[in-house]
Length: 380
Ligand code: AMP
Image 1 (tube, rainbow, N blue to C red):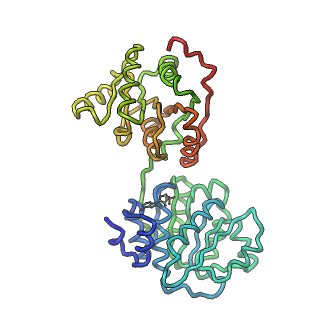
Image 2: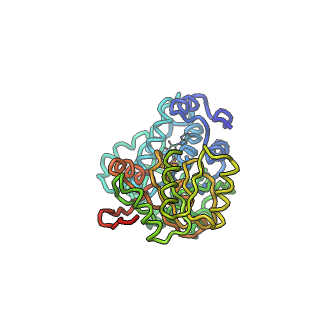
Image 3: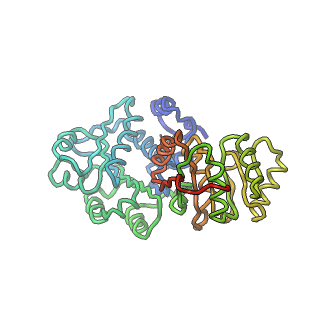
């Protein structure tokens, strides 16, 4: 389904093309038409799912021609837990809203900084992205009025509640007009989130996006700093010393997959390589053997990182890092599924250290790093 069939205006379609958004993500396919029709939406989705554009685009579309309101009376309010998210969301509104026929003014306000510049900047704002505490301060000093809000968005509602914003949120709800559209996004549905959805959402469209990032908290991630020459011995040491009975090892090329497999076999470890140069029959056989626990090590390229669902896979080792953080998540997502904790180890050579930092930043997790210098690899 292309963006053109979702009901967005031509100027937004041009902005999408300029950003090279070719296909809507699943949450966008469902949320955009519903929000355009002024329906309430409950989106269970995390960062990475495309949730921001799923509400930014239809909100901009719906504002069309309706931007003039009494000064300091905003039309759209987006509540977020942190200043980082506030800034990020504002930037997405600006990215898509900059070339609309009617100009739209978006502002982000959050605590931690001086309030005066934010008070001044609130002149003629249509869309306000705010953290709850700072918003209430601005309301109580009459810098902004909420009586003309048409659409309320709660983004990362679970995080807002975890940060203790419940009371502030309730006070804000009491200042809003009764008749309005409500959109709530949350990564999880805790009891607290449930009670808010019941309180503010009116017959919402419920969209649930399964995200592999969800598993990340179940996975123990480790990085071993190692030189290129010692990678092979370290891999064998880890498998033997940690008594790994079922481990999926990832390499970045067919050549390396075969190479690593050969060396494992020579050192008495049962391993099979699986990659694009193997026949379908050989791949299925290897995978079945591995899944049933009859093969200790499966060495794979990214060919199979997506979609392998092994009931409980305790270990994944990145012999080489993938280029994209998304592939990293797919690879390590093979472990720690269905509530069982797994371990994902990455072997990091000096040249890859920077890239591994980028991956950690993208997935929002710091990985514990271990120096392998002191490990005695003799005999491995
Ligand atoms: P979000 O979940 O809103 O934080 O979005 C995750 C990332 O996906 C952001 O970097 C967006 O720019 C990008 N993104 C969102 N929707 C699309 C799309 N339809 N096509 C390509 N990239 C997208």
